[in-house]
Length: 379
Image (cartoon, rainbow, N blue to C red; front, side, top):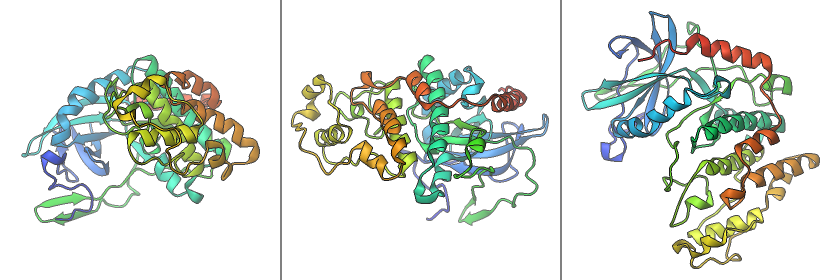
């Protein structure tokens, strides 16, 4: 059976159990009414809802049945902790949670402030899929400030990439938007996603980019894990037999993302077994790994010369940046991509290197936005 978006027939054993929502449906004891679908992912779908009592719009993230228990034990405590941090950090505003039954099982639901589309979506529409330097500075500076706030609170994000960085958008009127599209697939009524629009462009001038209201979301990989959950963009400490990850893994991912935003390409291609992959990282980054890693079971056959074709960070940047831009960009990226996590930049170092502050008037606008919506539907 083929579905236009989320696969409603995916077994629970494979992460399935999507909530079959429809437009106009009421949630949480009639507190919210679904008005449109914002998007979906491998663990959830997200819906724009309206609460007439306030009146105000919110986003409700409905987890699959398979993902709900983990979201309750892992993600829920994190978003509650994040909600207590400085609102100027551009982190998600958590409005509460509830459970919804679909007949097939129970779904955990998060109530959040609505977001528009992602930085990744904007990048895909850019020339050669890459951003100008001033745009990257704005994005990286925002993420670095958010990471400093998270790391100071002992929280790791775990998924630093462009599709987890969103434009913030107060939702007021949707009358000019097209009517949501539904598709009938056998017994299921599926709804097409309609992300909220924003007015920003990939080639906006510096003055406009300085006003971009962007925020950081998706804490599904967050917390303080000590073991490997997935490949954190080839962060070497997560590849070992004695795998680990920490807030410094976030910094690795920040450096990786920075290179990708600037060039539209990844900083290196690593394949083969772990020892060969790490040899490739050593060559591309011109860096040495911690000696204790050589005793790891997956590194027994490590040979620093046994790597594939590699391109250094500087050479990779030279293909896209102006000559006077390369040194600073390479220094920042290499500082994030040190093989030894303890030698990487801290989030505070990254804030200083990004050298872009949120303008005062943008902070003021964000404060008003957060004040008007924070706590309106705590459950």
